[in-house]
Image (cartoon, rainbow, N blue to C red; front, side):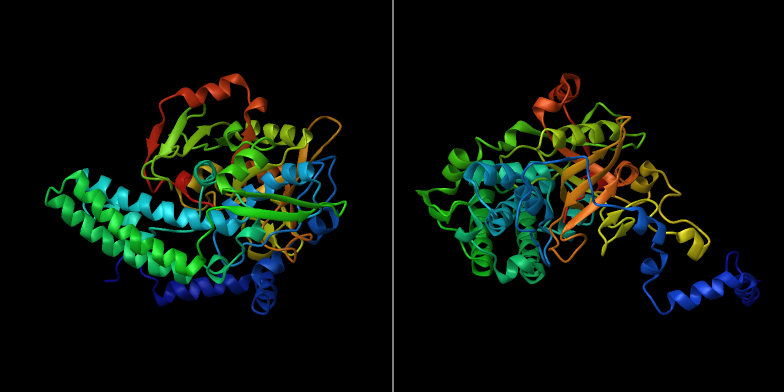
Length: 455
């Protein structure tokens, strides 16, 4: 007797026969066996009808287009791309970049320390090493990705510096080997710390052990990335070719005196849109064990309908301020032309079934088909004569050979389905939405999809 559900030869013959019943399948097979199936599904009509032209655009877009290369630093790049717009205007600059490597260095140091303290915290909570929480933490102890509040923690504690004062290194641009070394050490140290907790070590003994471990962690990071100077001097020419010099100053002084007056990270709030029925709008959420700086602000999610996020993004751009946002970037993305459009691919024509949009946004979160994985910057928007938002311009950090010289275009429909977060200045956010931040946050588990980090 054949067990139920087994693919018998009879069933396999039926599947084969059904495939060849429709000659379109043979044509589609001929195409897709010789080409990238996504490229084969790109809609020519969408390509012809899409124009990278917008009704409202911020006054100063940053130059040059940045490139995070083989690293998961989009959350750092996208935020620095936004901050530099106001900075370049104030200092009359043609081109400028803040040092992404500088914040990357401090994030690695701070996050390793944060992780080790999480191991102690979970051990004291009697979480087993085989349990879901500790297993989740050990799976990727120090990934590159991050969230808005994590960026704010770094800037408030360590400041900012120009890129010329701490340039890129090999392990910034290709971080996987360094991360492999750090992950192994952090897992080794986790066993040590959990052993101390099981033997009822005092808090002082645990802190002393973590400090010893951080000496080694700092050494590894410093060797791989270099170590930033305690003070910097920045010399530059402005657009008028005039020589200027700032410094010596500490990185924190540089941010406080020369950046914060024009872009204060503490004036911005992060709004999310999570339509799952279990997480009502108008509530404040946080994620268990998520963060990067011990003693820093927690990662908070103010959950609002996607229409609210879209409207506030458009309003920010109309006031010439770009917007940091997080999305599921690769869904319906035509990378070469830089288009994010629900109609960009005709999967139905090629495969006889549609992809991704048969589930709701909430269903895609629940079933693991979509989550926030990448952060970028919105710099322009198109609004029609009836006030309806049509599309946004996006500054990415994948270099100028991607999209339209580094820029993407996303439609309003795509925004509704695949955007999950947006950072807006408090002055634009209605009072009732700001009041949500006064709530005691509801804690979601560490593995919740809303805790996914932008890479």
